[in-house]
Length: 393
Ligand SMILES: [Zn+2]
Image 1 (cartoon, helix red, strand yellow):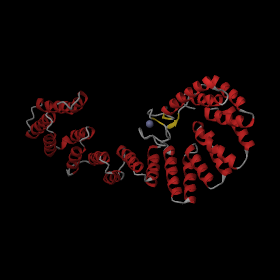
Image 2 (cartoon, protein in one colour; image 1 turned 90 degrees about the vertical axis):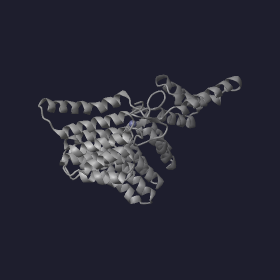
Image 3 (cartoon, rainbow, N blue to C red; image 1 turned 45 degrees about the horizontal axis):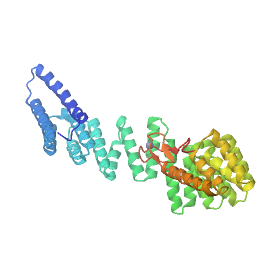
Image 4 (cartoon, rainbow, N blue to C red; image 1 turned 30 degrees about the horizontal axis):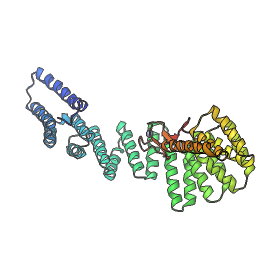
């Protein structure tokens, strides 16, 4: 009893209550049916075993119940689900396999059982087995088809089988009439990066083009394209690709900014870079852009002017990263006790910056210091973004 909490008990007792009502209803109609009494007795016996932590005996009793009454399919499905949620996947598998061995299941009951067994296998990491069951369900129509397609996508994402994920996502899109463009574009980016890592340059670019066709606003496509072009030495093409991010999702622009600067510097187009930074400052300022601009001011006019520019910006938009740079600017100008105090302050701010996450998922709040295109926590795509505000951009 100790491992049961109240919620689990309520979950367990709900089907019992339903079954009792049904059973009493039968009694009140004075139908004396031996099978029903056997069903009830097995059910209560199973429940009793369960409450006494004799789970295997409980499963035996529930399976016996299934043998005598096809009406108990839904209750048995609920029990299998209950065991899986408790982490007792082997028992859930046994229940669902037994259910599927029954010849008199309706198509809907069979599909439901297949979906439940597939969930059991997925929970155990047996994706191949889950996949074959789900593919069987995809030959049908209705709500179960949509569930099976979503589960298949989940498997293909985990197994990194991007071609299959794309095919299934397109089919799901056709059925639900809801766009899967965001996900499909990400799958193409994954495929492109994989192709690139194998030296298949043309294929990599082809995948990116296809990704963009499914989602024009996928900033990852532009970032990947920029990276590929940059590695090929095509700095102008790289800059053009990176610059698209401003219109796709400006929150990702700080990711591309250091790369854009590297490309301009490789081309020795310093004037164009300054003009571009000026443009960004006017249209979409963030601390990354301000710091890049401050660096340019420092090179061209001097440190004092750069510090003045940065302090002026930070008066309006406080930023921990900005504060760190400001301290560094002032460090070279002071000596003695003041310098020691500034060094201590710099160390504290650095620790603060290091301890803070840089990215956060807008869906579930997952935070990290590294970028994830798919949230490791809620598994949403494109939901993890650079943090804004005093601790971020
Ligand atoms: Zn998330």
